[in-house]
Image (tube, rainbow, N blue to C red; front, side, top):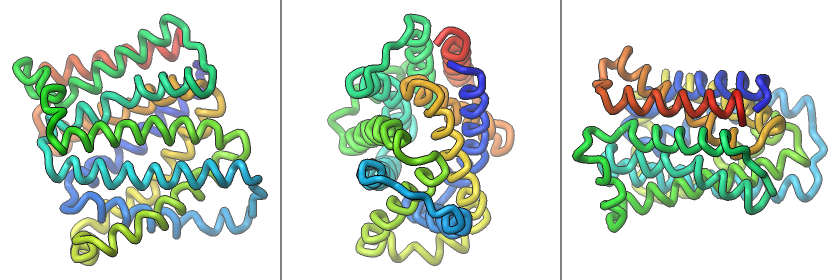
Length: 287
């Protein structure tokens, strides 16, 4: 992977981790996501209006598909966290995407990974699976729980991540990263709004704003910047590698939780972090 792409992804991950703690502590995660999407769309609209990009039909198709899949991701992962235990849901929601993205990149984009690059993806996947597994006794618990609705939703969310990542890689052939990132978030917001307004989440809109307005503001600023940097990196490298390196935000978020929120960071998480950082290093050097 080019060094420039790796640096962009590390910065993207840092920005993502910076608002991850606010999202994790929100009362209604789906309403929180709706609010920060709205803030991002409002804040960054002047730049897009001034640029007025010309986008071909293929670009709009990718944007529409990616936005709809992203909306489905927010719904499924939000419901999974509402209904299931974090140590069960999280390994499935965040551990599976690197492998699924690599599979999608190979099947639909013709990406050919090096042996070392594939090894790096496998290390990242293992680390992301382990990061919220509480003990060795719980090692297979997420897989054994696949009959449960929350685990199925988590796996559906991971499939959504892999699908929109591959679509984004294709879409960047037709649209520059800034315009693509902004318009994708806008489409996600528009498609997400009816779901919020027509479900029980509507009752939480005002309360979530007052409880989480600082976090919503931070997330609104950083969510677009993080996504834009990831898109810029995607233009320089395989989506398979980008999907894996971008996932380092999960480990950074866990580290921030340990240092700032005093969350436990035991031996399992140390191992998980080591695997992820080892995988990222392998991708960066030999991928």
